[in-house]
Length: 142
Image (cartoon, rainbow, N blue to C red; front, side, top):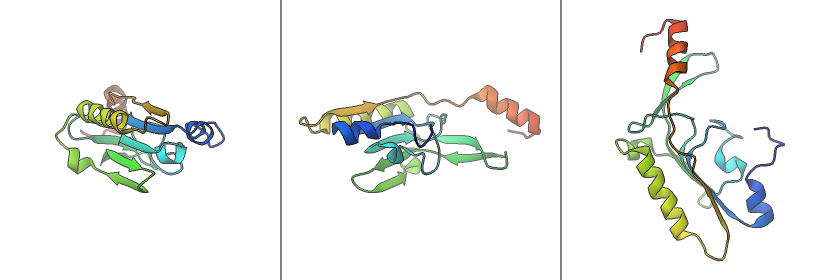
């Protein structure tokens, strides 16, 4: 997604929606590509497209093409000016259960006088075949 492309900020700015995301982001791991940079008022989930459902671990390629392991579970809130990695707090809990509880909380607590848009792309998964091919090409053991 390019910076000049319209994104969810249009909903909040032009139409006064409360905009929330729950689940997987998969549009960038760093600023200016994070959910709060793209018009969301809150985001709960993983930035990466695939995580382990219980440990919330992910594997990505760094700038040099090396496979890097990281924890990836976030609670971002524009109103509180916070962006927290909460991987340790949610470890051992299934991601789909966590996403469902957060989506219900957002829906039940939103102001009825203001429209609410909550997108919930769920079921983040690790593309195992792709990861396996990367590891085999580099002769790295799992």
